[in-house]
Amino acid sequence: QPPIGALYPDGEGNIFIGGWGGAGVMKYDHRSKTISQITVPTFPDSFVPGIRVLLKDSFGSLWIGTSGRGIHRLYGDDEHPRLFLNTQNDERSLSSNTIYCLYEDHNKNIWIGTMYGLNKFERTSNSFTRYFQQHDIRAIHEDNNGVLWLGTSGDGLLMFDKQSNQSRYFT
Image (cartoon, rainbow, N blue to C red):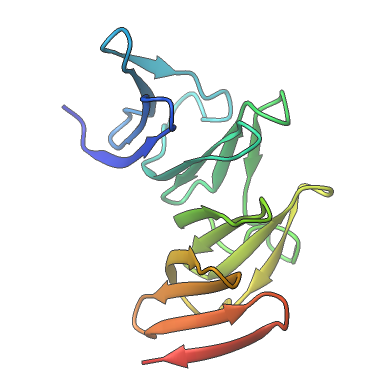
């Protein structure tokens, strides 16, 4: 059996499963008690990337964060699958193709933790705003005040107030 890199319960009793070693994305259906493969058209034919994290957003899109192959988005508000990658010299692209975490805040914004910082997805332009590119962002949580708490690799805890654009480190 291939290693499992990500699990995401969809709130309806189903579980999305992200695998490594060519396993791709699967879905466990709680009604039929079966697992089915999900076709991801944006995966290259010759290479299925390792899946690190999955998120189903409030618009019904499935976000697939990979190890080195960016983010793949299926379903939901955009009927066409999309692949989002880092593009050299394009500050509106992802800051890194290695995705560690995905989070939807209370305003339905998608935040992405990567090897090179935090990214906010801009729905109107299908682009990203980058923050803290010098940090490896491994975890994201929003508190009741709308403040993002970011877990980093080696730099401690980072508090980011989205409204004031202020940040504070706790090491």
